[in-house]
Length: 479
Image (cartoon, rainbow, N blue to C red; front, side, top):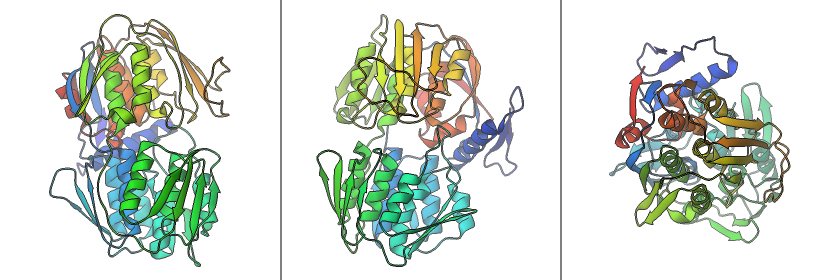
């Protein structure tokens, strides 16, 4: 069972059948902080599976855009308005970081609206930054805006889901090219720009989303022109560029992943409605498929999910694109095996493979998922094995004919043989997407499952408990 914080604000620990190891303790800590930040009052779900999910869920702004848009407000000394902001723990973390730097963040006139007043940005104490940033990797993106505003920035040790090393070298190398001085300290990294920041020519070794965001947020007010090659071009990146252009930035997206940014001296505030969260939409779609259900995802947009929709159809799922969302359902009969290679946009997103793998355990044949973006992202399959799935993970991947995505040194592969009936089990959530995949597996399985450490799911899924209820899921909550 869980031990509750005496203050009543969160959960300190979860009891395991055996003593938790260091990695589990770290995951528990992340989950507790995430849950407490959005007022989540439970850490464990008991789920009765075997019932199709049916109904409607509403998906709001993308976590991977909203948090970056909030940081972008720091580039102006003005007021910005951001709409369709979901109530997520990562959003709360960024809000806290902005507030300790003097930004006034207020709820707007309509639900999901934030008003960000950046007219009095100031330095924050290292301890304050560390206290707010422990469960997020976002602080690295504060560097460019704070260097422009204050001449210095500090990055504590970075947190987030434990799915790989997530090195920040791309970020630091780019900041150095802009003229930043990087000092590594025991508590983190301090950056300064005594001579200001200037445009640079940057060629990323890999089209990293985070590094692309770093360059955009830094280059817009740097003196001169910045040329970024091998940039990420995800929809969330394009939406961030749209925001920066509203603020007065001059940014052109060229062919072959090249982005040109002409620096300007100052930027103004923006008013913007965030792009929808395609990761959450794909998760609910996978849940509909795995449970043989029918789920309408209100707010989902076809053009940003086309790669996922193609694979969903190949597996045997059906969907209907409507003006205000997409309906996903299992049409009956056997699901089909597929081969998936994760890749940067416009490829198949790494965040899509984990929930879809649950559905693939019910496909008739052998499916293969080549994970080329992150190492160590198949840890969640241990729980699926416990529930009866037949999944073999190849830690170093393997060569395969007809590969479209070049092999990477860090890649892994999972081979899923189905169909295998899943049965209830006692499982522990390891990370955000893996955790939601565990929920899907428990909803698919026959019998009762206990899913522990669910607080971490609140990092990327708004009000997921209420949404499960709306879809007819059978579960109870425990502290």
